[in-house]
Image (tube, rainbow, N blue to C red; front, side):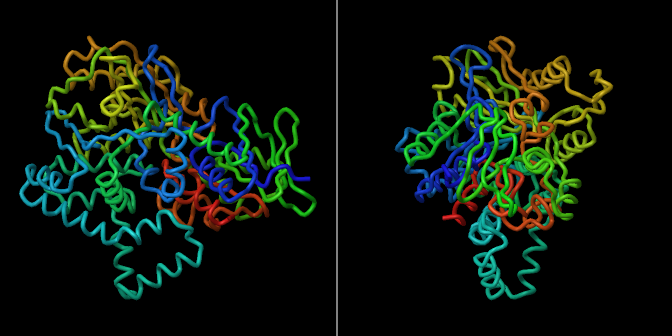
Length: 527
């Protein structure tokens, strides 16, 4: 007799969303997590000094707060103590010469900020965001809906009726524009280009990648709408809220439960799982795997034959650049030399501009440690003072263009291991490079630093096996491996070739991020 309706392997944001929605529909769900805590990349810990709470990996919740998943579950999570912290200046860019541009949640303020940098840029920005607003329903239905579905077909037909066949083809052609071409032909000021360019890295892309311009527009629209919020007290509080919700609905969560294999019946249907300790568990309605393709097919389905198209897709599946995280505990909030207004910005990118982002991204793609990485500096205590003792502060740094396998140092200063693997010594030496960038821009930075904690791509993979080579996006996000073709060219929504086995997570549509999109889409289709 089946003990559960659905068994979910993994406990990242997509798994938690799926479990919550299935439970809300009356299904009995079991979530299995091999680590000691749930949440995947949502992890909070005192990794620098006592009393300093750091989101070890993911932190910004804009995609979640603007998602259908939050619309469906936000009230339930709030009832279980989940709160979010905001600032009206969610992001900005700081160049080496001190010039900067701050982006707010107020349209008029943004128009003025862009116009101050260059005549005409304010009006251009307003027009771009206005056009994005007009297309928002269509764009978000493509980014967040089941692409192989009647609903998407109806949406496309409406667009054909609205724009005409040629007009719709032109729209898609425009949507495939790389960020470089878009920024160079749209904005005049270097600050405006520098503000937007780094955001392509957070999509797993480069400024020269197809459709990266469209993603910049989506990000700008979403951030102006919802900011860059964080969870009060740490991202871990969001996972605790999900845990309470799942259990309140009759679901079960087991940590330290390493799934060894997915079990199939004689007809080839997924019927449950077998844990590494030998325990067998049965699922009446199916198994949901929130893992990467290699984990699903090479580990959980090891020894089970796969169709040629799946075997080919798995062999050619590519992972993207690695990520690096650096955390600081500070005696006092940072004082930015370029201006006090930067102190309240949630996420500041340190880069000289479009060419600098392109260069660091290309260096990382070629296996080189960037000479001057693009650095995303988060200031969580500007939004949530509870993250540090009174008077103190923390910094959350992300380097989205870090090589997975190291071939050399673009600056020619660091000795790199012959085997290309990250070592503790290299990690700290590379972190020193970023430390120097901060010291150039923050007054008395060395005097206020209490402790630093760095995590290389190898460290991140050790924390979460789905971060292959430190890739936080579940695989390369280029056009050939996205949308209709994620993870494989023949993929249909979140089904696999095995009846009763479903695949969700960053490696599936709609891709990476904290929106819980794949979990929401699958659960909606199963209820």
